[in-house]
Length: 403
Image (tube, rainbow, N blue to C red; front, side):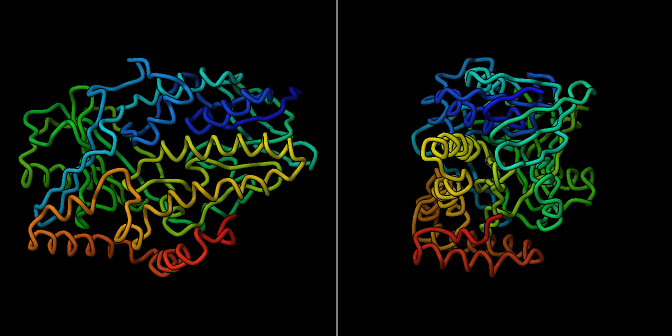
């Protein structure tokens, strides 16, 4: 049995950020990854300015091989059924277009942690003074002993499932899929990530350029037909935006996503000596960018372990106090009061809205309302409203909602 200070499950950006903090503090840190590294990662790769700053400050300049072409993104363009479009540049200028297969591997290597790839997490047992972690390395059982464990394993949630077996049943799941097309003609600017607020297209519809092709993506309730949804979006893009694409390539991508926790402040941060961070904890920025909050929450989980040892305090107590800042930043992005009266995002939506004519502003607000109604069945409205009202009263969001 291998004994270390901390075991991190998943070789993600959140894991790299956590590992960097732990290794810098002198703690022996081991990262488990079920796939062989460098491994493929389904992701748009459009990083926010805040995430870019974190990578530069903690890992250094990004090598060229960690980027797709185009290598950067200027911002996001919102499209509406009324055919109003709103391009918005990121604050601080263009940001990198990450190739997650290589950017994640680069960050993990730069963290200094030891990595065991082709090693799948199986389960754990928290014995108070330490945690036993069961895994399988290339099919063979292997066991680790650590003082703390950090689950940074994304929406697949193996660590969360080990702690809270019923949790996945308590949140709505979506399927997010994307197909790649050779381009015949595409008037959509390759400098922007394009998002559609259109209830007829799905809960999450996007498109952007990558490596000479165009991605067409759609998110919807798990169980719906991906091929049919994709055809609807592709036909809409051709009819409304004159986007002419070749039939999709064979390399179709898709995965289940745990949308919802960030909207309603229903995060899961673990228990005992087991911490959960990144998207596994529920962090997801508006428009589905999760890399920046994964990096920051991952770093906080590592800092909490270090701080708990220095102060001889329970790690959950420290982590939950420290992670409240990232909860505020992330949930603010979904808070209707913050959106209306503040600037919680990294592009200026209010300014872009004010540049429109009065008639177009009315169309945009009407279209956004109709899009929000699409989510009515999940009964998030009251929970979002309650969280929004809490924010100015207590200066944050209630910890009682967290697991």
